[in-house]
Length: 537
Ligand code: HEM
Image 1 (tube, rainbow, N blue to C red):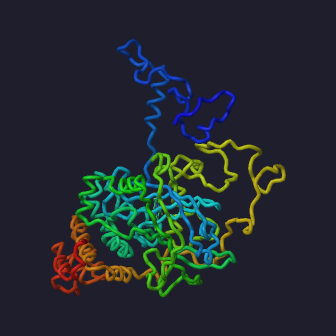
Image 2 (image 1 turned 180 degrees about the vertical axis):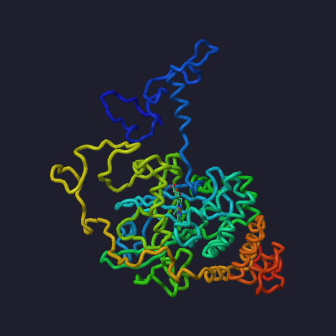
Image 3 (image 1 turned 45 degrees about the vertical axis):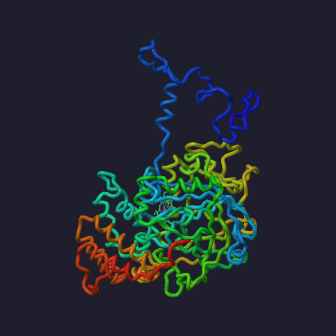
């Protein structure tokens, strides 16, 4: 609402501090000058022309002209909500991170997104979903920037521009489903067999979630946790939806994309509005820290691999409740800036080469997207912990710093902050050994590109397998190039013979050598599904 008019003697009225931009009863210019009329430009006579002198016309149009900022280069379309994270306390044995200690409550902001579409694209398209959580902890902001799938297409972040170029709407016509865009995506995937495991997830029902409230989330990479005594363990982060995991079927997803392109964001906003918060539990797979960072033959630095839950149970350590819609989409959902490098004491990253590139990328892209280095001052990005940095000036600086030029150590300015010890809460990196020759190469332990894709396939029920077959057939069916289709069938043959033969059949192509030619079309696979429990009474 509107607030009392400021007096000249009150230098910083409450509304200025709160950044509401709305105070006083009268409409004004940005300079606070009251306006008599905002519907008519100043003209030389009622028939014009309009006068250059009209500061109100020029300010109004100029500001409007600059209302948009660049959309994110990936994950452009998103929706977000505020909430609270409550820690159960059992994680205190593995991490000293304050927000994971028993009973601690931390404010959060969570943004869900699709990856490839533009800001105006539809919610229910087949894609990976972003699941980015900003914890405003007492020790600084911690961002868990995850996805709804536990693995990634590439093992090294240097390929990220390539996989995104191959998948984004095609540069000439900017149509996401353009036939040539299918060629480029499947060309990339079939030439990079490391992507096979992730495309299995993307072609499964996980690629078309029913609702944000029925999606799992994953930190993907292996992180290193540090406990209060300095002991370390390696972990994978999981979000488990309290409402369970549910997906759309393909026909529903397509109809929803037309009938309600805002299907997921509407579902979240309406649910919160109706008093039905979104709920997830945070889970940890805790693995022993080791020099080789391997577990049961799985390289923990390889982001195309999961740790099967049979080998390491997901232990639930807290609950996330999203119960408040943003007040302003631009100020919050659009301007929020997540960054994998926003870490708090007790949580460290590992040498996963995908993570290492991400640590550079987020801050870098936000310098452009949010117009300079001061976006942490935006309310949605502003830590709730006390901030006292020596960063100064720059574009869009809104703080008024006092005192002398900041540098440390300093014998002329007592007012400058001091550095802290680890006991005082400083983020001190574990002294993990780093050694080796400089090479552009992957370790041999990154070479297995198929066994976990097979594991995923075998984990599916009959109807889920049918959906995967149909999705591959539909998507590969949009390729112009038979060479690409055949190369992809070669990869699928390495995953599972039945899968490969069924997709080949759907495409009207022969299965690659060595694949049994028996009838494994979707309808045949469907007939093998045991009868379900019947309709719900
Ligand atoms: C944005 C997740 C890999 C670069 C995002 C967002 C999510 C995400 C959830 C949206 C953040 C938001 O809602 O604002 C992931 C996951 C990855 C991954 C889980 C792999 C495990 C990468 C890699 C790079 C990268 C390898 C680059 C080397 C970006 C960039 C943005 C972004 C530039 C836009 C950020 C912004 O404009 O604010 N990512 N990403 N991502 N990601 Fe990633």
